[in-house]
Amino acid sequence: MKISAMQLNINGKTVNIEAEDNMPLLWVLRDILHMTGTKYGCGIAQCGACSVIVDGTVMRSCSLPVGAIEKSMQIETIESLDANGQLSAVQEAWIEHQVPQCGYCQSGMIMAATQLLKDNATPSDEDIDRAMINICRCGTYNRVRAAIHTAAKNINQINLTEASK
Image (cartoon, rainbow, N blue to C red; front, side, top):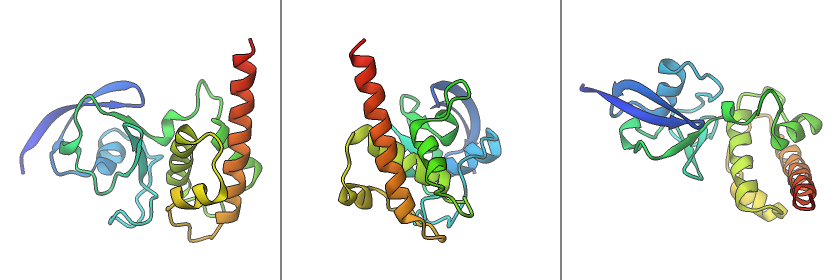
């Protein structure tokens, strides 16, 4: 296998790596960059534990070859969500609604919820069900839905407050 030097934009920072073109982004994140927030679940792009956001689209990093990523693409991982130690609105809502049980799928769920709220500031239950296709063995889907509604409300209140300044 041929190893290539690549530049990636991850969480707003340019990183240089050397990897095989067909190496899944998940393993680049975890094994090369030591960013272990993104989890390995099924390895076949079904469960969503490995979900990251690439140019505004939720993607399964276990099946995305790093060679398919152009250096201009913006990759966001769970590590991007806290700002100076402050949790995101989605993360705070996850805690408030006690969404995780085992917690393994949560980083992928949180990334999917984050992108949903960027795309749709006031999602309906149907919108949430359509967007949240991650698998949770613990079955906390009702808590996920409630947390997304709370996060949407909190984000919208913050945006209204900032707009009135």
